[in-house]
Every structure is written in C-alpha cells, then in structure tokens.
Length: 295
Image (cartoon, one colour):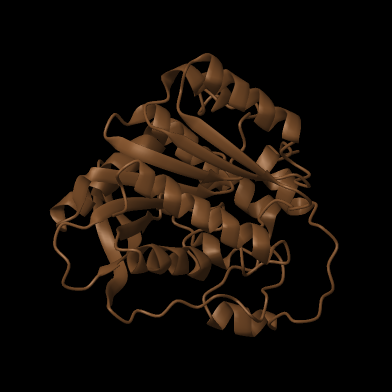
C-alpha cells in the first residue's frame, strides 16, 4: 500500500477552497487550449491576459548541472541591462498564469524568467489534473537542487543581458516557500516577495530547513502576502514567522488580507480576490523598487 502524499500547508489551502458559484468558468477543453492547468479546479473565464506588445517573450532552455531546464521569459524589447526577476511557480507547472505574470513583470521593465524546475520527472505537470498525482512529484524536489536551478537561472539571465546586480524573486504558493528558501540562500538577491508561501514544512528529508528555521539566514529584504482565510496557512504561523525574522533583525514586512483565501492572486482560480490581488501586486512593485530591483 502506497503512503499518503505529504499535505503541505499550501496544498491544504488549495484543497479546501472558499465556496464559490461555478458560473463564469471556462469549459475544461477551453482552459486546456488556453494553456491553463486543471489540477487547481475550474478556470475563470475572465482571466487577466497580458500581451507581448513591446516585449520579447517565449520559451527558453537554461543550462543546469545535469542538462537543460525549460523556462519561460519576458523582457522589454530594445532595453539594455534590465533588472532580473525570478518567478517561482505553484505546484502546477509552467502554465499560462505563471507565463502571464512574467509578462506583467516585463511590462514593469524587468527581464522576468520562470524556470520549470520540476522538468526532471519527465512529466508535464500542467497536464496532470489531479493534485494527489502531483504531490509525490513536487514533494520529491530536493531543496539543494532547487536552489542550484535558481542560481543557474540567474546565470542564464545574465547571459541574456540582464542586470543581476538588481535581482529579485517573487513566488506563489509553493513558489512562495521557494522565495523564502532562496532569500536565505543567495547573497546576490536584492529583494523577495512571497505570496502565501508556507512558513512551516512537514517532515521531508529533502527539505532540511523550513522558512521558519531559516529566519536567521535571510540575506535580502522579504515581503510576505497572506490571506486571513487561508485554510492551510494559519495566521498564527505567519505571525510567528514575522516574529522570528524580527528577532533576527531581518528586514521583512507582512500583509494579511482580511477574508482572503489561499491563492487570492491567482486570477484563473475561484480563489481570486481582485482587491487583495491588486493591492498585493502594488505592494510587490513598491518593495522591488524600494530595494533597487525595479526602476
């Protein structure tokens, strides 16, 4: 009998969504055709769509220790030396929402790149429609390999003319956890923004330290954006993380949005909350500007 998949805080928040009407969603076939994953549930019909006008954008390959990692990038056309922002995805793979976020960042002047760091499993995560099927794959990603992949992504961005002296990272859900981990790892990072990244991990030998345990090691100013109604990440755990960072004299700010569920920024999901999403995006921009990433 196989073991039950590890339910991390981010996944609990996904599997217990806030109740919502099913009206206003794409059919499954339309959602797949538009490039969205089905694992997170039905896809909203009025998703945000960011065009490539004024941008250079597309798929790429990033040299990593053991081969080539797929990625998606977007940058302002004709701009030399743009700042670099890494985009750390949710557990659903490199689907259209994450690609759109990179284009939004490029419209702000950044070379944004989302690496597909689960590629070694040989499975396209965007085609898996069942969270229990996804979990063994994403939970088997060692932190050491993840951090190395992100370092390789920074090197790729530099090779493409990006200014890695102005390096930022943003991430969502599991990618929010990635932001915390990378902020403790990279001395080159100028700022990080985590959207509902779990501060505490379940036991996993591949993840030696949870974000909470890494509080003393944070090397960059970090901003955490959370939903008060997140069923997987209790407000108390966010407050404890905030206190741990303060006790270690780290530059960090947190915003907890009243009534917002997990995934409030994900405009393709039922969890989307427009007001919290827009405020969070504005706070992210201000944070990256304050700490020298965005101009």
